Image (cartoon, rainbow, N blue to C red; front, top):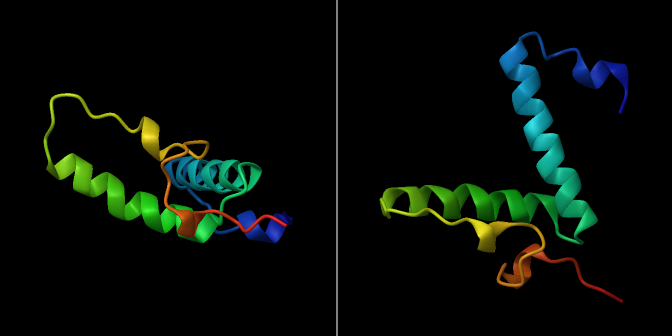
Length: 78
């Protein structure tokens, strides 16, 4: 990543948010997931679970290494 990519981060909260997103994307890549599809899945699935107001919110099945992720998130293997 070049220095110019980080010039738009001018606050501590912005830097934290960028670091979180970058970590999620790189972890998705390391687990052979399509980063865009994985983020899209997370951003639709997690709010639905929060709306259910369950007493115990478990997100273990949304982790990048989970076998229960939809196939659309996975990269095709050769």
